[in-house]
Length: 119
Image (cartoon, rainbow, N blue to C red):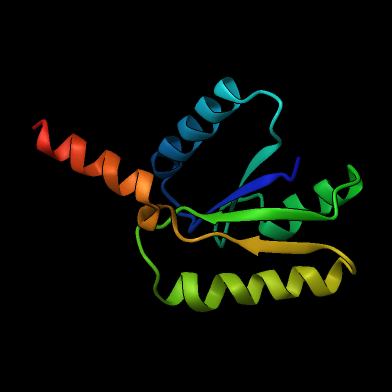
């Protein structure tokens, strides 16, 4: 089973990371056999490179990267693919599939609509 890596922006404010940590813990609790990790584009660690190197050492040759962003934009369209290409060049034979940003995925949009409707 291909590992999933969640990628978030990063922040100097430690409380900013807490929702991502909670999401990761909930995922691991619900799907304990699925390899999943969290990384950050900048400021925080681990980086995408750190996590991909670890998965490579564990014998994986590919991962799915999920941008934890509400929509496409500069980071999703430019920065994440640039980081991805750099990691793939460093780890010959390792591939990273970039999924759509989490906020653009139908199930997430449906959950947000339901949540807002119930207010």
